[in-house]
Length: 435
Image 1 (cartoon, rainbow, N blue to C red):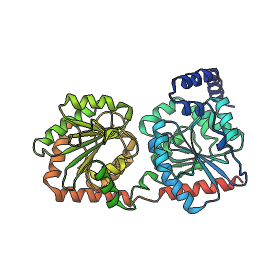
Image 2: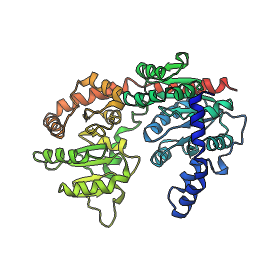
Image 3: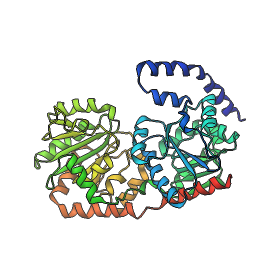
Image 4: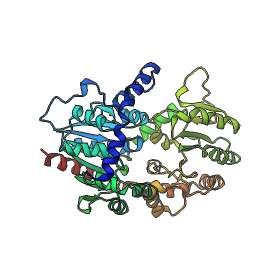
């Protein structure tokens, strides 16, 4: 056992006695009861493994983005082979809620164990996986090394290491290197991600490059019906102009509202649908909308006593609809990019064939940005709220240009499908090689 991992394992053991206190608090407060129990390795008996002849694959997707990737991979997995069980875990409650919408109902959903030796041991004994699949950048030393000690196969899929995160990982390179040695396969999105993984201590022979599974699943089976359903829910009529601002972050809503106010000068009927990245911030966003002088309605309050269908701004305070809501927009903006938060996945919006604006801070989604810019240059890049307003107005005044740029971006997204199937094949090959 390497010194760095021994130190980490010893340090995390000290958190073990805290478990009962957290569970007691969750029990009496009623908050996070289900997630708290499971994060400390206590799972419902109905999840215990019964059919030992059928391989069990445990997929871990931290939050909403990783769940979306998992959904595309699971769809390919079940299309190729059906003689296995899948269990999916998330870290966040928003990810858990999205998984209930995104994944087939027969797939058990759980919360991931905390990376404490006794907790991950308890979880591994209970779940009994033949293979653990970590999605994107989920690298937990105790979980990984404990699984390896039990001869459980482990792979990473849709792996990515951003320019921001590599600096942090290199500070604990010896710990990361020891952990990465336990993986059977490291399946990365891009060559750049693979090179960073090697810098962290990964063995090159374990690395494969398969592209980004986030491209998969962006095409709709019935796009027209999906848009019409959203239009009915949001009281949007065929000729209404809509601006969708998705996954906005703190410090960004004020900028969007300024841009929106500017747009209203020439397009007074324009509606704004705004979805904060973290729905628990919705009350804060409400205050910002009020301060800007706009009427509002909450998505969770549609049809309620105080609901105002004619409000200018709709705040989307529920999980699961944003990807479909983008289809209502004449144009969209993806948040976390006008403020330094690494950006957000612009491909969901681009797949609808409409302009999708983003700011300069796209560090975590550089590949997606490069793909769009290869198609339309920097037509969608905005460096300020003023630029957002100006470019949006340009497209509103030039519908042919809007249509052309939107369709070019959409085509760029769709031609990059196929990575999810490659990851599914890696999972199947690794799983059956262990039996």
